[in-house]
Length: 316
Image (cartoon, rainbow, N blue to C red; front, side, top):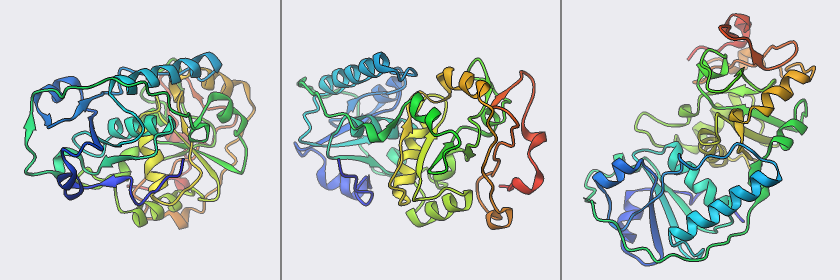
């Protein structure tokens, strides 16, 4: 499926001109309590957070695709409409919903840039729309998704780059959200929220491109963003595509797939990534490339911050 980075984001004017049109379907991805407190008229509800997958083996991927077909069928998606995902800002929920539908091969999806916060005159309702279920099957696009095997096969591969978009605390192993803390060896790190401006909208494409290049991300390489469960990395997927990176695959399992940490432990890997620190001065993201001698797993109670050379750390 062709991706048009110039059309993925829409704004309030676009939405206002098309509200109520039969060929436009709105999907509110906020938590249920927020949806029932007030949503855009006609918006269907799908919070992707409860639908989590970390296993990317054959059985896990079959379940993942079957679940998506069921979800989008229940939402009444046919494949012939334009689907607009929104939340309060340009957040990970809307991005995750859009990425899931794009992975299933839908040809026309959008994200409301800035979300409801950007619509000052939004009229919210509390009544749900009447939805006619469909039989949505889709055509999965494997080039948009990275599995555990894909990531393992690219460790140390100079044609690919791993992009960690979790928080600093998760990256440095200070906050544990899985059995092991740490990061994938060689991963370039930048918190996903650095792709948003102060209003919660995506930064301009040129600014995103400059900041990603300062981090050392190369547009000619395959970029695999990951986080804890593939939600924040779905947001990074679109930020990278908006910035003109054509080869991006979201790691569905991410760090929640504990097998990746075990694999890192078993491999004698060095973070074979070197960035000219002078070239990165002024970056809005922290540049902290893992200088690990063996693996990306951090002992409990320990942090990588003290082991990062000062020359490789760019202050915010």
